[in-house]
Length: 437
Image (cartoon, rainbow, N blue to C red; front, side, top):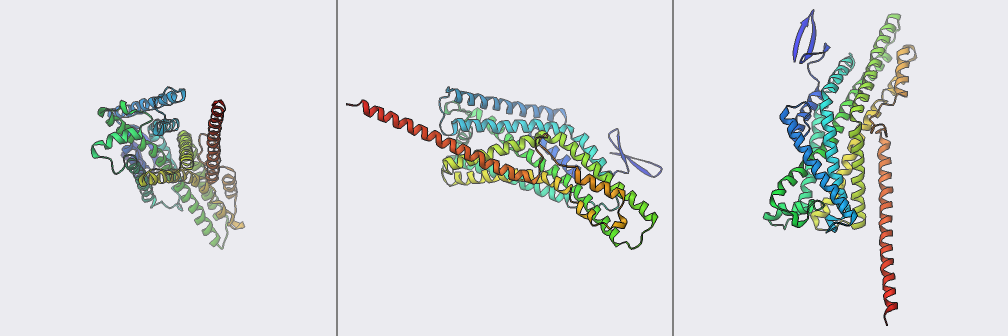
């Protein structure tokens, strides 16, 4: 970072590119996100990292792609009737669930890689919006970094606990130490490996790919929540600015032409800040839409799968397997709710300045306030899944109702299949009895 002075004006450069005059030295949110993307290089999201990180990301991508290809091939074999074993963790449902898990992780790495590569341009635009928000009545969000750190720590802890419980539920407490790795690999990746296909050298790559896939699948949701919190924080600051200005105006007793001119100028600056903020949300949404779409899709799929298995098969096994089934379902629901609610806060906060504008006294009402009211009322600002749906709080209820509907349909279809099988067995028994002397 280089600083030059010309006639008392500070000018900031990033590398060789001029950013903005009078720009603050740093931005809390952008600094935190840069740290997140630096750590993300460890599990295959390189961004603008050096060539070594790019090679590492290519290795991770190749490993995930090969695993996904093998999982898809196993699903095809099971559907075609070529598979040797289609029971328990090698059933068609288990194989398809494994293929979906690695598909989610593979897509997550590709999309997060793309986002991290574009983050430098996005962060520059974000900084320019922050400079526009530099109005007298816009207070800084001093607790934003603490909230970001708390959310990151909580979601990372939840993902770690869920993964550790999956290992414990898979191996059990009675498993000998020498057989823990073999038991875990064969049970957790039974959709990919048969018992006779296992050997010690394959255990390390499988464990590596499994852990990386788990991290990537959780990382995209953490990324959505953090960026949503950053956008919400800026709307909150603007709303507090409007509340403060309206409160100060309502305290005024005298009105003058000079004051009116100053107020019009101030409200124009506030309205322009809202316009810039709306453009920032749309710019982030254009780079973020695919991640939102696939995050909600895979979350919806795995919630339906867990509920379907829990209803049709029950929570069977030992105490650790039962606990893991409940914890896994709860964690997927919590993650999905966090993603939807964090993104929905952007839409909610984009409208919260309207009640403050309605309290403004008539003698201080001007054309800029009217334009701002019209802009906030008619312009729908929200993150969306590539334009297919807007993430608002009503989406959470729609997803819940859809999950219940699809699970009931799947359960009913499964019951019909059982009834048909029972009917066929009964008909065979009657035929055999009729043919016996």
